[in-house]
Image 1 (cartoon, one colour):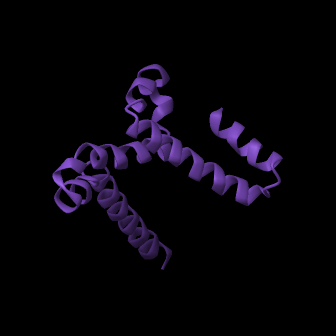
Image 2 (tube, one colour):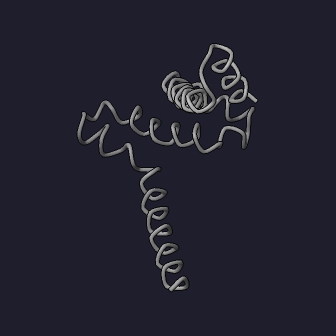
Image 3 (cartoon, rainbow, N blue to C red):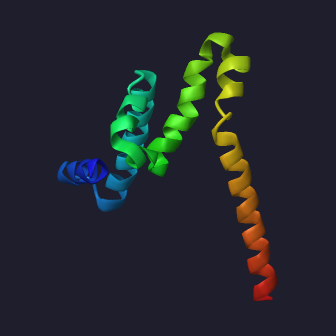
Length: 110
């Protein structure tokens, strides 16, 4: 509902449909990271439940949370290394699944 409201706001402000969708996505990512940085995302998740796991905001939280938590360890060993602790497996297995699906599609199509 919040996303639809943001989308409609951007359209009301004069953005075309595609631009409004892009701006809505960027805004939701920003809100997810901002709430994570302010330590409010977890509190919101307790009340919002599965709604906070929406891929765009949930992924923003999953990427920013470890980065914020480990920033005190330094730029490389803390922030950069820990940023992919949660999201890394998702990226690896998602990419592997996409390659496997592509190969199956290519073989069965031939």
